Length: 221
Image 1: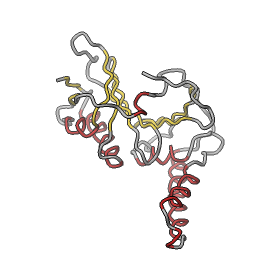
Image 2 (image 1 turned 180 degrees about the horizontal axis):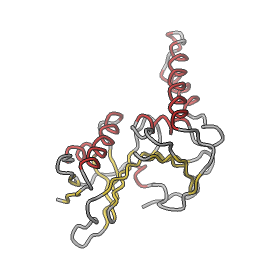
Image 3 (image 1 turned 180 degrees about the vertical axis):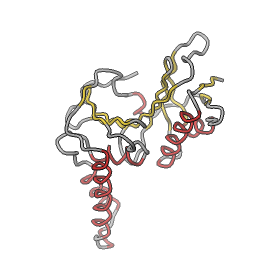
Image 4 (image 1 turned 135 degrees about the vertical axis):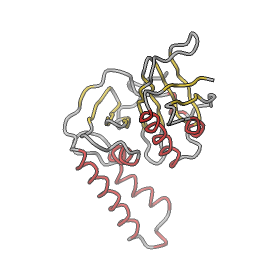
């Protein structure tokens, strides 16, 4: 049994909150965990948003488990959540599971450069609220016979695939950041690396592949 000692109770609570939100969208969610030194990164993919969510957690001491100085494993998000002890600031690494396809393709660790033109956090939250309101208005206006799953999905794709100004960041990435509790506090930063865009905040990041760039800069690890 591998026990992770998180930096403090707050880190444990933030990890638990992140896992709870992922499980809200997918009760059988899996997450990929990577730890090295005093940093733990937890990756998840809420299916409703088609983005990669990343929560970084500080460890109280450099990771080590016998001769292993790094951790890289895909586990059940539910089992990991159950193991988090917020008062003790610990979490137990569950047994490995067969990872979903997304878990084999992660954004690069380095090479990120800033992208300008991203609105402030308040404006991004307003954008999400307006998009949600538009979706509700357009779907409620449909005749009952036209309110099919295919039509609802079409409207959703149209709205959430729009980009934020000229940044190339799809609105669904901002929606995901808001839904996962990342879009709080200070203004977020937008970064790019190859085919990836990453919306980074103090509470977590959302990464997405830019449209039309094929399989460039895929990091399989």
